[in-house]
Image (tube, rainbow, N blue to C red; front, side):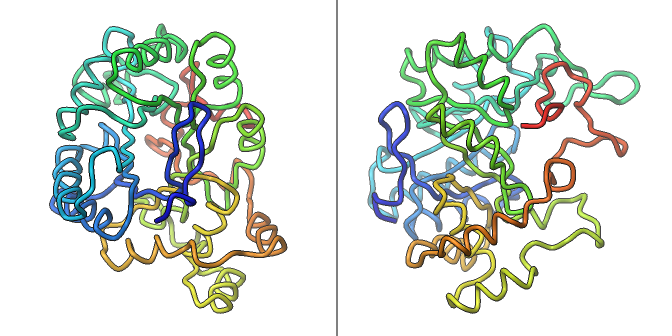
Length: 325
């Protein structure tokens, strides 16, 4: 993927528009997937501590760099701070643990994975006696952000950003922080195109990064009666026109509107297919058609923390999805 397939962030860094996601990538598979992706031209790997696979991701990065004969600085690596490490005293150690697991001296980008904190500790999902998650309500996301800024000063990370933050939470960081976030990583696909949040972030010179860009068809809680994005007739028609797959049409739609996109796969052929989206362009009308799939916040959002059939974290005062965008 050429340099033209990058975006210039507000700190002057160039971030590849397409990356390999590693959420739900199983042990025994993710290392080979990362290695293969780098060999086939990917220069952006997206990871997170809570995925539980950063050591294997690191193994894949090491082998991939060797195979591709490229330097560490030629690869963009993102990771994320988990909810149990929001206390300012925990942030640096959490980052160092991720660096150790990945086998890296620095991260290109470190994100606050969610704005709401859980009780500090080694258990990523600490529980109350009734089985609910044990929240930490005394650590606002701004406090965590200010601690993230110190990681930049120490050279542990090159850029910092947010994930799953709503517009009000982003604005607070902009108003009270010293460093502007470079990106906000959120669920985004045609059923939830995030147009309002994107417009807000565009005005603030913050890029959106789309996770689950294909609607996460392998999400464990999907039900048979839910619409299947990649089987939509409009997408299949566009795929036929361009001699591409429906997935490639969706990914092209994202990168064409300058949304950084991180589809996950461990299948070599799919990893290659997902990258083959820079040799065609959708028309303005076709871009509008795909954007028109949007179902809105209530119906379109597919990735919501659930527990016993309810939104698991909705009672947390910093839960992001209790406002429109």
